[in-house]
Image 1 (cartoon, rainbow, N blue to C red):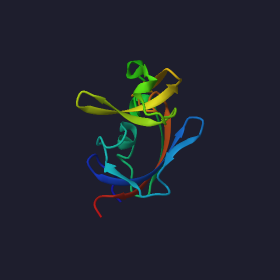
Image 2 (image 1 turned 30 degrees about the vertical axis):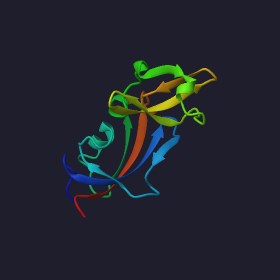
Image 3 (image 1 turned 90 degrees about the vertical axis):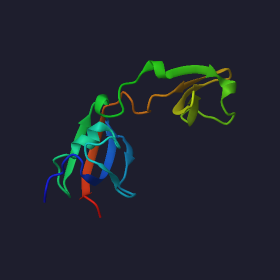
Image 4 (image 1 turned 120 degrees about the horizontal axis):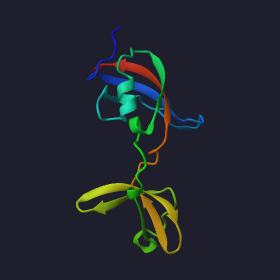
Length: 141
């Protein structure tokens, strides 16, 4: 078996955990995640971690925020008037904010009668993450 090189199409199963072991996502009950090794389709730490692995190989990697979803940027948080949001919105909901001609995903962090704190940081930004990776296949079908 040959090792995965940058540019190879790979399919993996993964389980993502916080440092305390709590699982935040896994692909084990669905189709494997498919992406180009070393490419931009997934977070850099996972994309680069598969380079050098082989089909069937398992590996656990610990990723600092820079290799995951980046550091939290306080400038991406904004307090807005509560009346600008749909009435049924709850803390933790994801919405799309329009800025110019762009749609940006935002999450509701705080909510009260008058204001809401919206956050355009990814919910996992600033977190050190642990991923269990298993290469299912390499190359096209």
